[in-house]
Length: 318
Image (tube, rainbow, N blue to C red; front, side, top):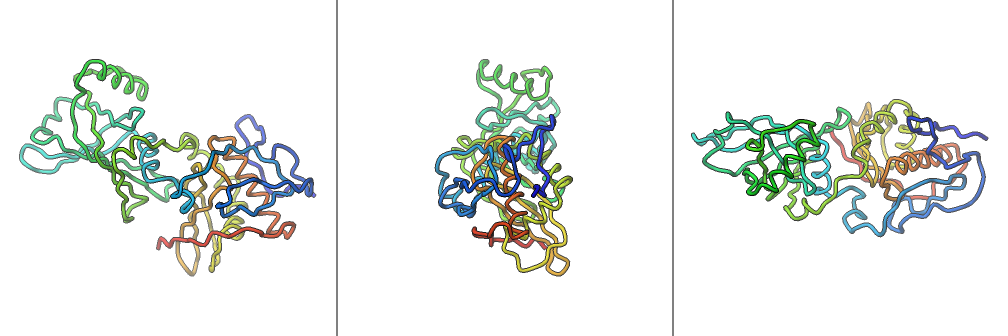
């Protein structure tokens, strides 16, 4: 019997799915996962996967299977390049302008302003608001509260100049470079969502998501070429009490992926499908998706028993 799901491939058409051989059955080897993972009892009878894993995850990750707000904020800042800088004018009015920015290794925003921005004068307190559109369906965002100032020594100025040049490929007048010190961060999952506050130490020590640079392309590829797999995931991995007419991936990260579901009778929902184990690179993400697709097909066709806990937390959007 041949595999019924289409495997994700790289641009060189190398298959990352099953390291080999997806015919049914081959072996009874187990897919090793953490005891606390919702797919901990899954037995991959036919699959061999290339997956990057790490040691024991943190308590928050175990509970939500989602990245920390600090990590999400760092990811947004790494992927973003344009934000809204707001502060107080000499006349006491709040004013926001669009700016380009880059970030250093700790997520500190570096700005290149010009002489016309001298209206930011009486108070250095400011905020930088950055948004990241995901699949045209969700817009996570973060707002950095801090003080805008100039680097205080030549060595630091040279470092920020190098960061800017690496980001934009252009030389800048160092006298126009400014930084926004990070004192607090407000992270929001989308418009109208309640934000979560992140302190500066957590923000600086967090790492941006390792899948960030190819997440958008991978999501688009899955939504375009793997519609049947995505719809099958709703039925196999999520515990739904309504019929789904359409489903799409919104975003993918090291711990799993988010899906947007449409029901003609119930409305619009989001569900988080965690990976069986953390992934740290593109190869691991593609391999894991293909393994999960194969298992979902086996369960749907009754070749494998659904011996795992389905995701029960489904959030209604409207």
